[in-house]
Image 1 (cartoon, helix red, strand yellow):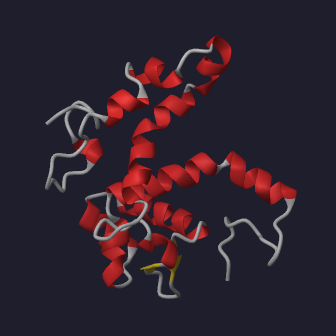
Image 2 (image 1 turned 60 degrees about the vertical axis):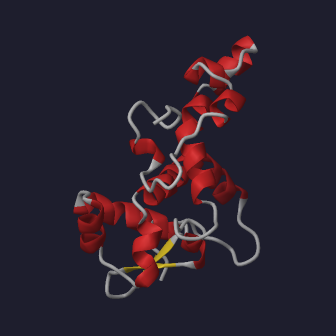
Length: 167
């Protein structure tokens, strides 16, 4: 049974309204997946299903909020909710695990750089670079600055001063 908050989809083609809704809410899905990656939830579920209480305890987060996050991620097929109320990994969540190659690091970099996209209107109005306007550096300058010390397991966003400050 599909959750009430999930968009209804035709087996072959989604309606233009569904497509418009997905586009309009894309930032929500993106931010939910970034947070799940920062908390390493795909890794937590790799060894088997867990309840929202167990996930919240392991990630030191608020259990009712974790329940909401997990259900949102299920609506985008990142995880699945089992009949017993636990949450399980999916093929999609496998792409976001930290212990194997995938999209996790790319996604987290995009998450850290997302504020520049929030300033897209600045570029359209002025012709100036929204990334420089937001961060004071070009993407190329920030790419040259290591965001994670060699061998570090510390998430990028937890580094003092932001993700691009040298350790």
